[in-house]
Length: 288
Image (cartoon, rainbow, N blue to C red; front, side, top):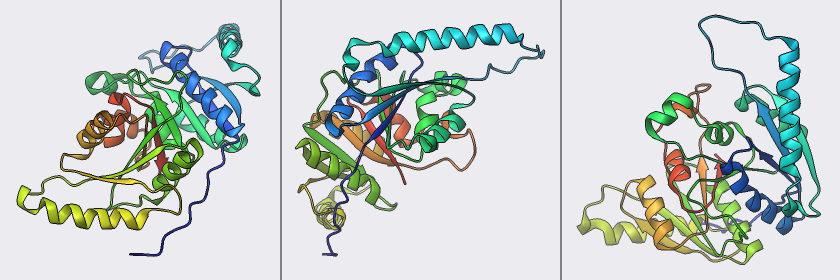
């Protein structure tokens, strides 16, 4: 077996929480607060005023109208952050304008953000193609891990007892494994390391499972000893089924940045997009 890598414990001191004031965003707040309590972190609550969709006829905005929109957003942001559950957690309200894929990375750098927590509406298919996905635009452009809470996820009083970490053995899964291992250690959680190996004939599965588990073992840092799991479905289906069967309360997975600007938010088929939109638990995506 290869030399066991030492786990570098993650540090979360600043959490960025983008909100659009929707029920999906409100539902994600308890998870951000739980992380803030666990790591003694501060929260930056941000609302981003995004550009209006292109019109056939260009109409110049009246400055007074801009002021009203800005002040309305500021008022709603103040109301949102006065949630009694915020308690004594240090927080700061931020108001910005522009494209999410540009504003969020800038705020991450300016405020030394260690993790983003965001709620998602879980749109898929044609609906997503037409209106895009703000959460996906965030997790594919952010340089730090992004924790998404979909409409089917349960985040109230959240503390993961079981963490599922699916990996692509053909990629570079070490960063996702490190985060999963560190979170499992910090929250005293069960840790499941999984690989999906589709299109394997049944007569070769026993041998393939042994070989895959050896490769998974080589990824394990010095920390919690994980369970190994090999599934035979395509990756998205394998992850969702494993999470449901093992009753995972957090999925940690790697995600690649789209090479084409803006492309990631309009492709409905990436594995991460499928998992985030359909998972019944929060999903932590780590850029690889």
